[in-house]
Length: 441
Image (cartoon, rainbow, N blue to C red; front, side, top):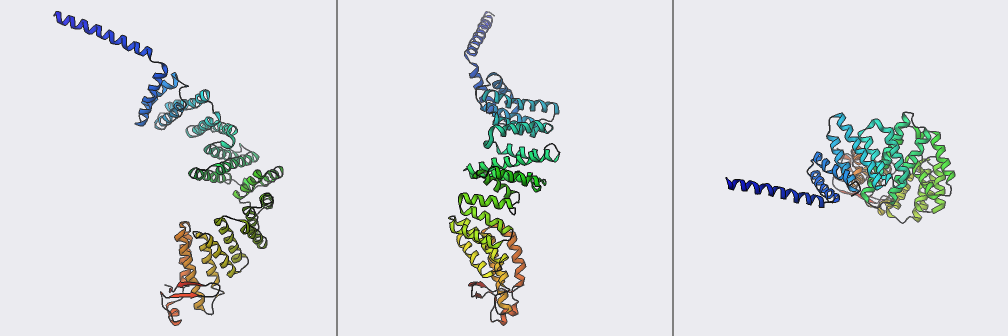
């Protein structure tokens, strides 16, 4: 019995001693140390997707050490997005959304960078609380105002989409919508020019496409007001190359190449640079308006000064197209498209055009029906090359192949002309190509 009493007595004092040691250790542990431990804890819970438990440890850091690290706010946003997405109870979900918005506010409070953060806040408000779209729009507008050319691509796109929504609901007037479009286009265009990351450039190009699509979802770009506002910008910025270049790009994006303003803008830019691409833009204006003489003149200028093989190939392609469709000079069209292909062997579109040239040549080449129909062999050959080197032309090439193989000579025509299917056949004169004989089926 005495031994038991002594054992209990010793155990009691041991527990007291352990508690005293633990309390002393807690006193030595600074709030920062505790917060760092909690950061490790919540991040481990994040990894295994236990977001409720992660939120408890994260809340401790957020409350006790709001200035410890900027990334705790990024982490907090990730955790609360997950909790919001999973929550079914409307009241609880609203509380979680309020907490998410508060995280953004406190990040600005302790770490600044309001332009960036308020843009993220606006996007999440759109995502989780659509009824507050007016407030979200103000956040996005503020972000763009503060960050200017560095505004987030997602922020710029959402801002433009809401602008057009408000415009259709008569909450924004035409001038505001047009100005927002020009500003949005300018920001994304500048980022594309400055960026060197190919994957991000691809993303920016998609954003630019969506901005244009949003703006063109109404007929505002067809109004006189739109044209007048761009004309006024051109006059106001007559000596500003960058701003005039922006107007040119916007006119292209809204299908205004045929306008007098596009011609004037393009001529002005050509005065600045005398570059091949500048003269090509003028040629495009004349091509659209079917003034082929002037178009050829400026395409020739472009070819003279262009050093980039692919761009020069494009200029030769356009010259070939003009000679085929506009000037009806089929032999010259063939010569020009051959130069285009010589500069860019992977130019599928040029092979489609060459096939079309041979189809057109069937009406002027040869002394008899057999020789004329032989042109369709060459045409089909070129369509097959086009789809083999550039997959995006597969559909159009297949359509043309299916159409023109019915124009091949019949078996008896081949026989009566002294040939058989599979023989090589050389077409002379300005064509000077060899093909394989095939009968129509």
